[in-house]
View 1 (cartoon, rainbow, N blue to C red):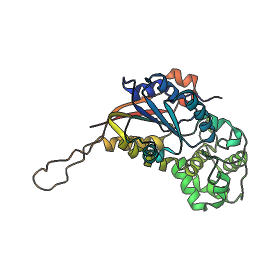
View 2 (cartoon, rainbow, N blue to C red):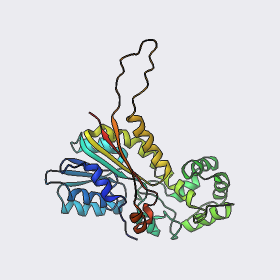
View 3 (tube, rainbow, N blue to C red):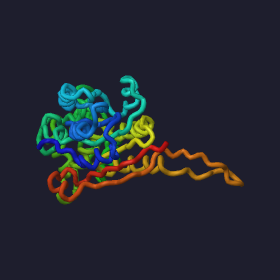
View 4 (cartoon, rainbow, N blue to C red):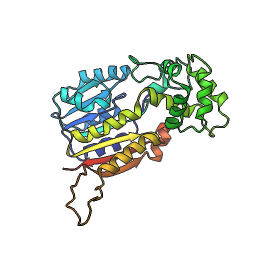
Length: 303
């Protein structure tokens, strides 16, 4: 299955807010769907900088660099946003977007080791040029720590049983092996879901530091935005969406005055205002089932 960009037009339209020029950032290039549409709507003076860790995504991006001089790819996590942009002489931008989680090519290629649907080496690294594979990571992590990861990142109620079974299995070389271990250890799983769904999600999030990167990325995105610049982020599961929701809520809410006695002159520390929250349409979900759980949250930088 080729990668179909989720909430494509909604994201780009929200990011641009009627503009056709400026400097924009795509924090998660992937296979470039959002970036290409963005470039098609911008004039010749505009620039787009994209980030990605995945070597295959970087190959696609390098081709786009050759085709369009307005575009630049940066081999880094969006957690390095501010520093990487500064190295390219960019301090402020007109918009930042990100499409979180794993891409269809990563899921669909057995050799990447993300999915139990196709047997492959147990890898799961978004940047498979560095760092431990999932197989190596599982061998090193303590049972209690693994149970906590599966519970927190997979929201899996049987995390302790599953962690014990994994640790008792020694080195696990393939996705099929891991899926079977979890399935045997799992006493009851949701209808229409594989027993290992939550465990695979948890391990992937942990080894790629996905939630930590989001927490580091969001404040930087606000820092680099110009007044009236837009932040548009697509999430695919509740853990991601909760982080984004809470961050936007905090940045768009006036803090309570905590002074004693007479009301003090309150400093307005708000940096964002909420713009919208958009779910994939029924038509999009029908055409691309992976968009079913997607949410787009949009906020605008205040002066």
